[in-house]
Length: 72
Image 1 (cartoon, rainbow, N blue to C red):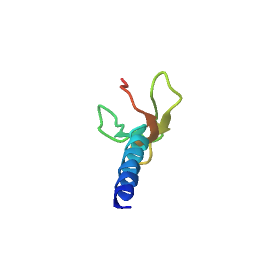
Image 2 (cartoon, rainbow, N blue to C red):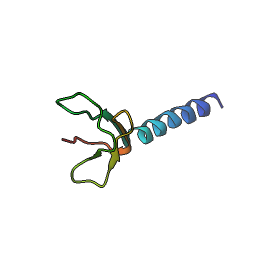
Image 3 (cartoon, one colour):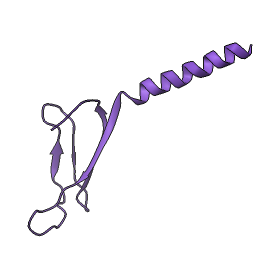
Image 4 (tube, one colour):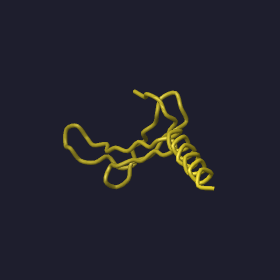
């Protein structure tokens, strides 16, 4: 019985690690290069995908469920 509990626990950790590693999130802040003021309502997107976000009142954006990979 104890061995079964250990196996089930190990499986749960493995499954949760795999699920957690399939997507990520990206956050950032967009501001005017000259004035350093935040840009409100700017559209930010990952080129070659349909993933994007708009900046809020502080110039901040958040993208969730981003597939694992390298983006430029």
